[in-house]
Image (cartoon, rainbow, N blue to C red; front, side, top):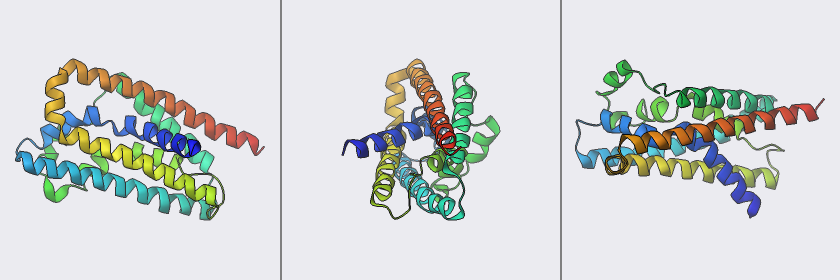
Amino acid sequence: MLGFLSTMMFAFLALFPILNPPAMAPVFIQLTAGIKDSQRNHLAALIGFYTFLFLTSLLLVGGWLLKLLGISIPVIAIAGGLLLFHSAWHMLNKDPKMSESEKAELQTYMLDKAFFPLTLPVTAGPGAMAVTLSLVPRGPIWHPQTLLNFLAVTCGIALAAATIFIFYRYSANVIRRLGNTGAATISQVSAFILLAIGVQIVWGGLRELIRTL
């Protein structure tokens, strides 16, 4: 049970900073400024659900394809960790996740575009995809421990998707109470956690490769 919870929380902590709901909540409010509160709440639920569905499908199908094709999981882990490190570095330097032109273009996409582009790539972009692939469990596909690890990572994805819904659903109230300083602080803490997790994932991949030498 302890191992299951550890794997689940690691997956959640790896995904939460790159999904970064606290930083994306103001963007979500801006993009949905022209719709009713009830529609915005429904859209938040859809984005959270689609994020879970997309990343879980990527974990299962993408992970099994990598195993079947013989592509090295440690190599994917290193690539994902480096991408995390790169994203975290830009977040710490306060580089915007979306350009102003992209924000203006997305103003026309609402409920009928909940999956694309509001879920993919705005919420769950290439970084989240790389992290999900780096979380694919090691070991034989049908081994009970491997299947249990798949379940643990899936639960971690569910937790991350739930935070997207919570922040998007209650973003207006949360941001109003936190203010710009509070939101920026949460974003910077998330970026630092992301930086550390990126290093951890890279080291895990390198360690696996070194063992095969």
